[in-house]
Amino acid sequence: MAKQNTAIYQKIAEKRANLELLREFKTLTDELANELEIIGDRLETMRDGTSSVALILSNWQRIIQSISLASLSLLKSTNDGPNGVVDRDAYPEPLIRINLDDNEQEGEIDNEDEDEGLEEREEVS
Image (tube, rainbow, N blue to C red):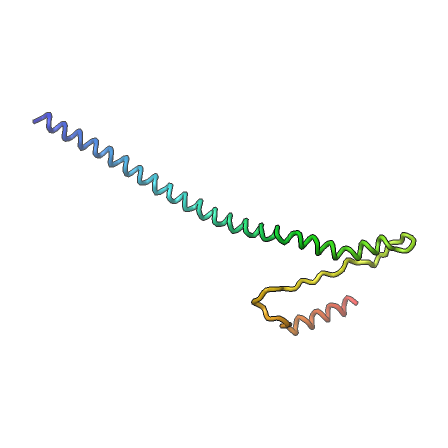
């Protein structure tokens, strides 16, 4: 009977050791799941960032063309100056940004902003 008791105690000790290993495994699995969620969130942020960079890079060629077009008259005036004299009053063509967003109503102008713009132009003149 003593042999049966020691065998039972030995099995109980093995089961407790297995239980402790399972608890540790569960803890590590939970930590791994949390880390994977954090990595997923970071990847989502990186995806959004790369989308923004891709949009900027897709428009970059148009930006360079616009700057080149605006500077064309300045380049002409420096090359075509009489007797090689550079016109100091030559400026690049002004660029105007027009919002093409469908959400805004076309032709809608804030009168206060227009009045302020006129005042600023009069002061500069």
